Image 1 (tube, protein in one colour):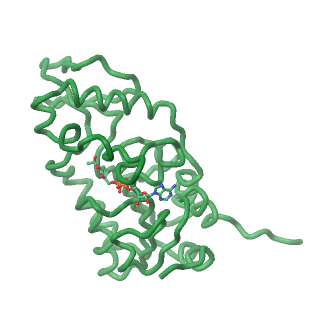
Image 2 (tube, rainbow, N blue to C red; image 1 turned 180 degrees about the horizontal axis):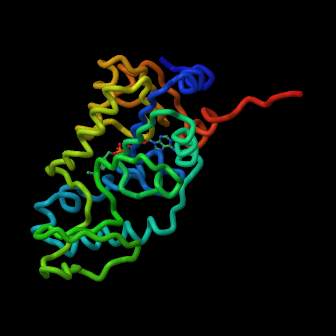
Image 3 (cartoon, protein in one colour; image 1 turned 135 degrees about the vertical axis):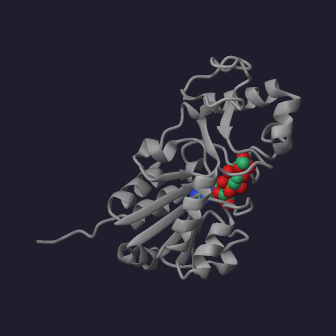
Length: 245
Ligand code: OAD
């Protein structure tokens, strides 16, 4: 059902356990391209050539060029009012979990602390052969090698066909199952298992609210939908009433 901002704000204000699931749309107003839709990364580029373990085995240079290009672009992006409102929501809520499919780190830059990164983080790099893992914000040399074992390093992100990190998935499922309210913001809801968290929360009795520019495949079973830009809607959920006196 299409809801008013006031209705959703009252639900958020009254909730003790808030869970938020975000997707690329929450970073769109920071200048980060989404994946689907007219300007999306996967409209022109093929995910199976760039975000798949077989692609990395076949042509690691092509995959690293893609990730270095994204790292370079993301270095110029800053959190927008949607990220900032979610950080403020966390600070004002007794129990708050932010689950994100985004790898850009913008939630943390905005001050969010409890962030579950389902698809990893583009600023981290790890060795597939040993335990080496590091984080930096530079564009890396082509085909970076592990300083410990000399294996080819890879971005610490989850590619299609790979398992999510089990602890992160477990915490996300637990949070969704225990939420009073789940806000699903800026995701097309097409990628599993992230997309199923909304259904899970719904079945466990949470109020579910979608914030998106447009309806998605999930809109039908959401309790409420707010259509518009996340960077305009979310700050309005955090507005304090003006006190006269
Ligand atoms: P998508 O690109 O599939 O969807 C982005 C969603 O954000 C769409 O539903 C848009 O309508 C919405 N949107 C765009 N701008 C918005 C705005 N300003 N405010 C609110 N909503 C807006 O991105 P995801 O759903 O995040 O995975 O994609 C999920 C996963 O697929 C990604 O994590 C990535 C991708 O392939 C991997 O690479 C493994």
